[in-house]
Amino acid sequence: MTSRYTAGGDLQVAYRTAIENTGRHMQLFMNGKTDQIGEWFIDACPVSTNQFNGQSLVFETEGRVYLHRMDNYTSVALAPDVESKRQKHPSVAENDTGIRLIVWGDAPGYVAGGLLNAAAVLPDGSVAAINVPEVSIQDYGAAAVEWLTADQFLVLY
Image 1 (cartoon, rainbow, N blue to C red):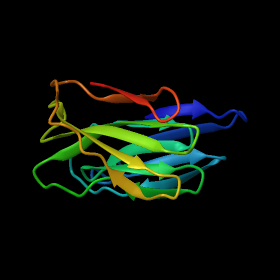
Image 2 (cartoon, rainbow, N blue to C red; image 1 turned 90 degrees about the vertical axis):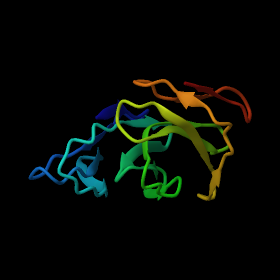
Image 3 (cartoon, rainbow, N blue to C red; image 1 turned 45 degrees about the horizontal axis):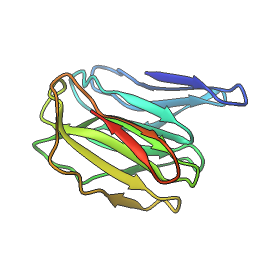
Image 4 (cartoon, rainbow, N blue to C red; image 1 turned 60 degrees about the vertical axis):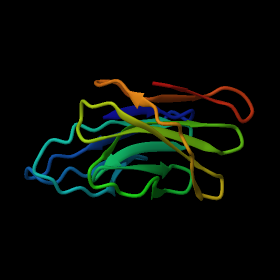
């Protein structure tokens, strides 16, 4: 679960449900109501993470990382599905021109750090894959991203 208060004082909460042992859907509570923004049926506890930043929420559903845009209430998968890997532990940063950089790990399980992966979502909503050199995230680790200045982002792993 992740939560925050907006500049206007509104509470936003993103969390995963546990409905009848298989419904691990991503939920977003804001403006006094809850909406399901990602559906996932799995008879397990996926132990996933999510993060808000600016007008963005990133989360994992069905082993794929998604960006949910709070400004137009749309969600988009950031990379193709790879059956042997799980896209997990996403982090997002957003610059002042509306470019969102998302980083995550591709690995077979929750504790494996995996290979660093990244995508940029442009202001028009298009997704641009980023060619990341083969970099491994340590087991039990995750990647993080922050906007620095102009078109520069800092990625830590």
